[in-house]
Image (cartoon, rainbow, N blue to C red; front, side):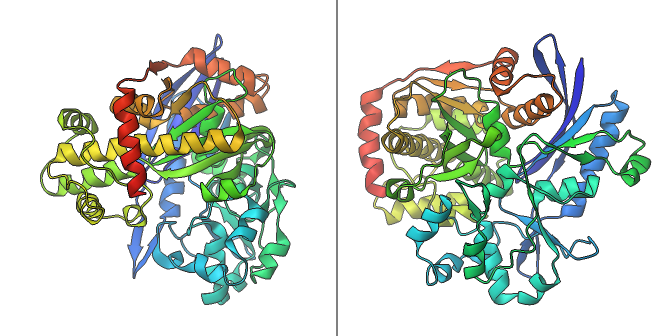
Length: 486
């Protein structure tokens, strides 16, 4: 029986999970959970990285008290980073990707290198918060800060550094930066130099699944633990989630559904094309040097933010209650583009949705149920848009869609996705990211042979529910209307 410790940090919470491999199945035991909220200070939104590291240490202690573990792996969100000086000390808190500092930076970058050329070099979806744009901002407006930096370390790698003292960039997290040559899987130093971004601050890239190092003597003494291995799992949470997709097929579609919806497939080589650029498809790294060919869709963030606003008004409804109200509301009254830029900013989501519907000449939803239904239907229709683009660009005939992650708990969205895309949807596992994190640790230790065996074990360990299409003709009509508001 093998036990490993996985830390999965998302944009709103983090968890420590002990996983046990026994008799060909993986069981998970959440032993620590903590909130993760950005902190706004003098107009800048930060991550409280020292708080997060303290929570990881608390999780390690709880895991020790629960019987111990054989290795540790950490995954987080992408693109963000910390800077450390020549003494190895952190230079300030990392800035949150939702901070406004890069709102107009892509347009400034495009004056020096066109959008087409940038995509051609990196294959990465153009998002204003990509690491490249964050560093361009620093190089242009806060050059002194970069001059003080000895190394740039991405968030999961930074937490690993705090544990081990080793400074490396794990492949999948580095791939989200828009700073890699996707074919060579190395830093594109010519691109960075052309934008006056220093390249000597970049860490060497380590492959997914390698042993990064052992817990440092200081950590072992402080927490009374043994110097177990820290594994460079898929540091980007989506990379870990994709490892856990319970399929035996080579060609499959996944939606890693949480705050964001990452919609894509797994390829052996980068796919960089004009069609991919127009459809906002990106080439991010996956386990085994694969490519996660996907598009980022603003996911359950919309309903999460709407719920926060309703709570402030005294309507403390669970997500299940919101889904029930949505199911009772009249279908196909109005739609929004989930990726409308204003939706990505915190605050008053219900009003933003109403304003969008009014601006696009649609029915303006009034009730909590109507707004919730608008969100769920719009996500399902956006998935159809992504699915059709993916099939066209790759030339593949996909037989179904796998939804993994927290979004599998939203049965209403899973059913709507099956109906909207007119294809079967397999929902599960819920704990996709944690399972992928765990699987890579177990492959690294030799307890699981390879990713094919890992996916079969995950399938055998999970409750997978299949949703079949309903009311396809009505969804076809809705999609035609949806296209008019994009």
